Image (cartoon, one colour):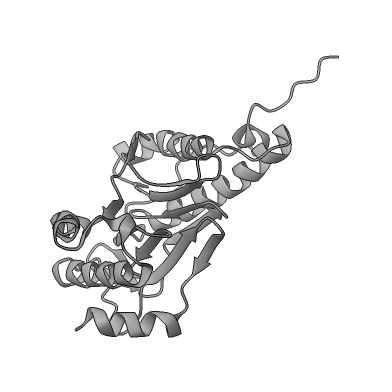
Length: 246
């Protein structure tokens, strides 16, 4: 009798990345962004979830740490995004236990691309569309990367930033303007970069109804460094928000 082993985590648990799991009424809408700073990457996201022209929820969590070296911020179909993020967390652990060593940074990004490619059928039907951005630390190269993806799973390395979501189109030009006026993102301290990130979220919210403003409910902010992942608590964020408001 020949034993056959599952080729990957998806086959092991029977997770069909292309199955229907969303509806046209699924909650979505957001602005998310990732910015390099001199010690790592800051990932910011508003907290509004919308359904058509309705505001469904103002405290959605759109940043997921897949492990201690990989953070994603999700835009688009919220429920489907969370489902795939949970799958990815377990897939990383499964690969590590199967091969007895941690999956490489490139391997983790390939898993994200694979999940998006598997979701393409739903995206083409106009439901379940989600586009993440990712911040990753490569312990071998000792380097950080900021990445964005298309609906087919193609991965692109951002220069030092990435943004996605319905409000992102309103702020794309600001990133390069800040580089010209304040210097490259990786040369700047964390707090200065966070103030600029909060300012851009505020601008996006003022121009995009699907992006939640943070003057009442602060956005989610997560920091990725070589030491790991840390969520910035509200008491640390409020002084920076006050600076962003001038």
